[in-house]
Length: 319
Image (cartoon, rainbow, N blue to C red):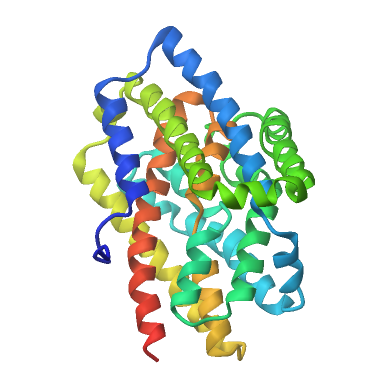
C-alpha cells in the first residue's frame, strides 16, 4: 500500500521516537560514555559503507555535464549558506543562538543521494546527471562542510577548534570512506546481496548518534529552553529556506537555458540536505552538549523537503 505523500517516512518516525526515548530516558554517566564510544565506532562504519557503496563509474559517467554539476555545487555550498547568513537578523529574533547555529549547519551540508536520484527519476529528469551530482556532493562534502563550518559557525562558539575538527574528520570520516572506496571491488557483490541488512545498519548508526546527542541535550535542559512556539517557528523558517532555494534553482536553471530534464535534476539535487551525512558530521564537529540542538533544524528540514519534493516530482512527471 502506498504511503500518503504528507505522512512522515519511516526513518523520520524512528527519529522522533528516538528523540522521545532520549527525552524520557536519557543516557547518563557510564552508560552515556559507553554509548558515545559506540556511536564513534558506528560513524566510522557508516562512512566506510558510504565509500564502499559509492560507484566511481556513476560519478565518471556524468562528469562531462559540468555546467549542471557546477550549478548544483554552487547552490549546495554557496547559495544555501548565504541564505542562512542573510536571514540572521530575523532568525535570531525567533530562535535561540543554538538553533541558529543548527540552521547554519544545515545550510553547509551536502545534498542527499538516494532521495535526490529517486525524485529525479519520478519526475522524469536527467537521472545519470543526478547520480553524478548527488554522489559528488557527498564526496566533496567531507572536505567542504568542515571548512564552511569553521568559516560560518565557529564565530558562534559551538564548534570544536578547526584543527581538532579536521583531525576528527580525517580519522572518523575520511579514512573509513577512502578504505570503503578501496575495497569496493571486493565487497560490491556482497553489499548488493545484503543491501537490506546494510540499510538497517546504516539507519541504526544515525539513530544511535541522535539518541546520544539528545540524551546529552535533555540532561542540559533542552526542553526547558525550547517552547512549542519556537518549534513552530523553526518549522516555518525551514519552509521559507526551502521555498527560496527551490525558487532560485528553477529560475536560474531556466535563465541559463537548461532543458526541463536538467532543470529537474538541478532543483532536486540543489535544494536538499543530507540527514545521513549531517548526523555523524555534527557528532564530529560540535561539542557534545550542543549536538542535539544543532540537529533539530536538520531533522525538521529533512521531513519537509521529502514532502515538498514528492509533490513537485508528481507535478513534473505530469508535464
